[in-house]
Amino acid sequence: MIRTALVSLFVGCASFAAAQTTTLQAESATLSGVTVATAVAGFSGTGYVEGFDTSTDEIKFTFNATKSQLYDLSIVYNGPYGDKYTNVVSNGAGGSQVSLPATTAWTTVAGGQVLLNAGANTISIQSNWGWYLIDAITLSPSPARGPHKITTKNVNKNANSDAKSLLSYLGSIYGKKILSGQQDQASLDWVTTNVGKTPAILGVDFMDYTESRISRGASSTDVDKAIDFAAKGGIVTFVWHWGSPVGLYDNETQRWWSGFYTAATDFNIADALADTTNANYTLLIKDIDTIAVQLKKLQAAKVPVLFRPLHEAEGKWFWWGAQGPEPAKKLYRIVYDRLTNHHGINNLVWVWNSVAESWYPGNDVVDIVSADTYSQGDHGPISATYNSLLALTNDTKIIAAAEIGSVMDPALLQAYQADWVYFCVWSGDFISGGSWNSLDLLKSVYSSDYVLTLDEIKGWKKK
Ligand SMILES: *[C@@H]1O[C@H](CO)[C@@H](O)[C@H](O)[C@H]1NC(C)=O
Ligand SMILES: *[C@@H]1O[C@H](CO)[C@@H](O)[C@H](O)[C@H]1NC(C)=O
Ligand SMILES: *[C@@H]1O[C@H](CO)[C@@H](O)[C@H](O)[C@H]1NC(C)=O
Ligand SMILES: *[C@@H]1O[C@H](CO)[C@@H](O)[C@H](O)[C@H]1NC(C)=O
Image (cartoon, rainbow, N blue to C red):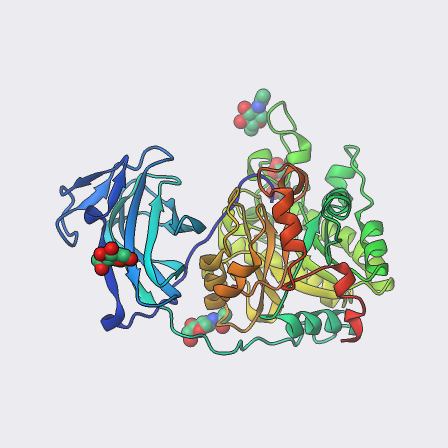
């Protein structure tokens, strides 16, 4: 969540049929605010483009396609100034953010897919973080994708009928429809009132249930709200902004209520997990046990939960990701084991929320993979991230857009085969402020046949 985010690390997966690949040289494209250079050897063509230092800087390529189809795009770049992001925008829309990891060699990185029209098209590389060198882009027609190979068998062998129904229902719509979702009850109510439809999924938070926050005055009714929403036939998802159990700075700049941020605590997850007897390990278990009490209420009310603990770990801005992938994966497996095997909580569908392979905790503890992306005003299908998640599990797990800022255009989702099973728009201004999503756009998305709303999923448990 909350402010930052937008990570689309692309992990491989493009296959290039050499004969069909077209290379477009940056130095021959239309340049705005950037210049051709030749100082860094090893480029192709007659030069490369540098000088991405303001947000409007852009390389605009033109490409004539023989027919309308999806293309795999890759970017040949050099990254001497560190890890950066760029934006790829085709025909002025459907942009996606592409990670350009630090490198001092000319490197080819997959840049997702672009849907091109028959005839002339434009593809723009836009600054975003800037500070990288672009040599060229390549385009090759995307190979047709076969049917999904996903499993809808819950990883928890003792999953109850509610959790089984939920995963199986998601499997039944996967690739055919997308469930609408909204974080926070007040924001969901805003959608009902202003858009005229109620989302199928309510997103809520275990944030204000643990000791380090409750002792400072926090409280929550999110569990009750989830039970009420499920009683209306809706689906619920819980994230957990887990305030560190100890070590909160709680000063003027780092207040206790930000205690899930790495910057707000000196709690060290690697140290806490080093052995099972130290005081901080015990505090982590105590917090998990506190959440177990809430999950048991949901289980008793026959509410299955899309449960997404340790979200955005790979971003490192939350303390559970701050020490790298190993402690984060270890803690995720501890949470899974404690809730499933110790507490016998069987109403959960387990949602993992990082994209990079090195952060993946394992097929045996994950039912669904997901990502959070925020790109203001961009209603593209987030296909580069979707394809990264396909590659992450070799298409064996259902994929969800667990948090988004700007909602995806359903037509683009289908054109790109970006088969996100649900989206969940973040709360507050993201949904109602007008700059991330206009009301007209929300009305059009919510009335699309491709987008399922609460009234359209009634009775899903029986399906
Ligand atoms: C691309 O198509 C446009 C018209 O659609 C044409 O004017 C132009 O010459 C074509 N460019 C190339 C390189 O074929
Ligand atoms: C709050 O604590 C952090 C960590 O010690 C420190 O970096 C920051 O300067 C502190 N802020 C204030 C206002 O003291
Ligand atoms: C537990 O974490 C706190 C906060 O980071 C730290 O001050 C304390 O030394 C840790 N305790 C142990 C036993 O490591
Ligand atoms: C996906 O397939 C690759 C290559 O076969 C393998 O190395 C990788 O472990 C697989 N990933 C998962 C999550 O099963």
